[in-house]
Length: 150
Image 1 (cartoon, rainbow, N blue to C red):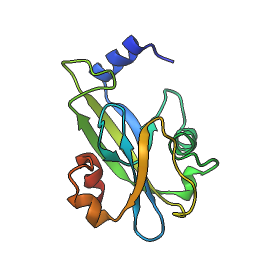
Image 2 (cartoon, helix red, strand yellow; image 1 turned 90 degrees about the vertical axis):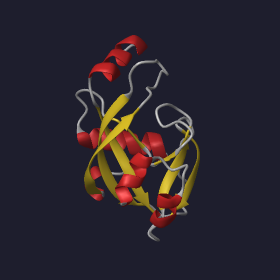
Image 3 (cartoon, helix red, strand yellow; image 1 turned 60 degrees about the horizontal axis):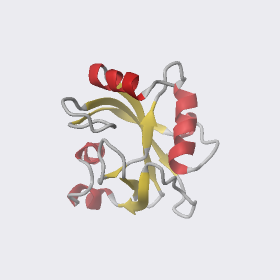
Image 4 (cartoon, one colour; image 1 turned 90 degrees about the horizontal axis):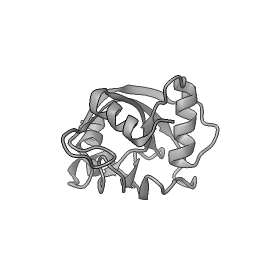
């Protein structure tokens, strides 16, 4: 595990690689969470997380689904690769001045029943299901998420 100072150096100098989850409920609605951490604080965002050094994509996918959604044993092979996206932010996790955060996001689409209890509240204060058309018109949904549906 990197120290905060080392991780700030990484964020300042390199892109981060993440897995973002495009979770739908079978009725075209998309799961978004209201972020309370930087970057993208106070916006609606899809669940996701960074891939750790030396972590396989399969292991990262499983960990992120469990950490972000509270759903265990979902395999990457049960999802559909949605694409590669660039996410740029003006700020960083620590709120340090002078540099932002740059992610290469690997998006995966998956369907979960809207009745499955979903959510972990360390990253998101609440969750909701939105239709893509509604998501695109809202000012409080982050632009990086809207890019998935344009």
